[in-house]
Image 1 (cartoon, one colour):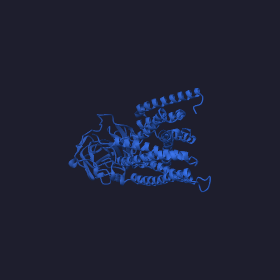
Image 2 (cartoon, chains in turn cyan, red):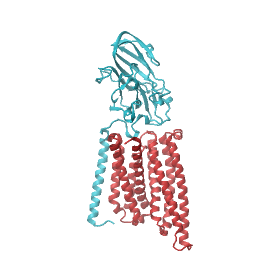
Image 3 (spheres, one colour):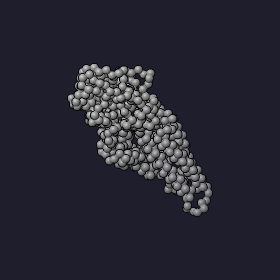
Amino acid sequence: MTGHPLAAWLRRAVGLALIVGLLISAVAFYRVAPQLPRATPVAPSSTTSPTTAGPASQNPAASPSPTAPAKRIPPPTPADRKLPRGPGTTEPGILLIASPLRDGSFDIAEMVILPAPVSAVRLAPPKLTPADKRFARLKPVASDVQMSADNQPVIVPKGRVDSRLDIALVEPAKRMELRYKLGEVTIRSMPSRAGRALAAISPLAAGSPSLRVVMMVSGNTVLNIECPMRQGISGQACAAGRVPHLRAKGDLPLSRAVIIVQFNLPR
Amino acid sequence: MNQDLLDLALGANRVLTYAGYVLLAGTLTFWSVVWPDGRRNGRLVVLALAGTAAMIIGTLAGPAIQLIFAGRLLGDIVTPLGGAAQLARLAALVAAMFFLPDIISGAVVGWRRILALTVVLVIAASMVAQSDAIGGPWEVTKIAATGLHVLATCAWLGGLVALAAVLIPGDRVEELDQLIPRFSRVAMLSVATLVVTGIIHAVAVAGGLSPLIGSRYGLVLVIKVAIFGFMLLMGNHGRKYAARAAFRQRHLVPDVPGKNVGVSGLAVAMGAELCIAFVILSTTSLLVMVAPHP
């Protein structure tokens, strides 16, 4: 069975060389794998798509814990880092930058440039059900809303938007900025890792359905982004960039500007 | 390639990998634990080599299918631990391929047994590292349960295949008499391990009894358990049949000289059992696809 002694030794030597080579490769792979190119930053073991993170048994009522105080992690501002050129910064459109908070809500900065000056602005909480029925029981609410139009402060009643709200401006303006905390947009993935959650985010500013929207999510605990209202699986798997600065690939028309964010609740 | 076709290809590849594991690890365990002198049996050598080939193909084809046909990037396909585990598994498969002549150069005891069981352990560990046992709550429990489950699977299903390969010709009454009791002990221990670890793993992966009952994962699991139960019945029937056949052939004069009715009946029972085993492997592959993700 072992054949000629020389052949047997050669077989063993080749076998050993291959085994050692493969084991060294295994160690090397383990070290370099985090730097491998990837389309989405989510771990493959969680099957990449945020919609698969929690099966149908997810319990929306189990979302933000009322006992967990929100830890503010301010989203990047122009002072923090350079904003991308395009909709909301140099062209008509909206740039939305969101960062997750400990209680499952998001701190959001929304920069708006309209095609022409307007004398009234409509704000409305995101409609999440068309994007994903799992969010049907949630009633998104924006609180601590700060608004400015052409660098002039604008009063938002009670600093809260939980239903459609029209705000008259003192002077017509085409450039606006909103800063607010968006709550009731998160469901915890059940069953899943402790702290894993899904959130649906959409701009607060209403406008022409074709207005272009760029959406970015910042935070070390953000895992993946999906665009549920885009066509096809490849269109919906829209995450680009690297943690901690993920964004939805390209821009979205305002009528379809909803992203689902898979993330771990920050500790 | 569209998503359904891709899922089908990946599912088929998973079945190939599991089947390869059962053949290779099962045969090595069979040699080490049940029949150390069985190394001279050419059929068992063929089983081990076929298992090695199937596992190598399955291990390489999994990522290749996703890279080539789904256009995904390597970083999206394998985790650091999963990729390292696959390479370690390939190393173990190379060891099985290149050192098999040494393992079976004498009775599989002593260092040969250690080498054979080490290969089995490395392959089993690589499968655990790629499984849903990694990550999420109850990680240590899931890893222990999955590891024991995988080892018990190879001891039971692999042993069954090896036993069938040895006994189905029907003219090996001596071996039949010797192997069935030994294998029965291994099989009973393995089945008990499978039941206990299977329950623990399922509950841990689903996150509790209630989520398990209400999920697709739970439904497929119920189907798998039903098939498993049916297989146990078949196995029990086959074992009794084999014991009676061995007794008849040793101590009674056959009705028709030269006709081995008992052992061919055993062949039918074992054949059915192996078919069910294949269905169980396929169901397991399906379970992997519908398992809740951590």
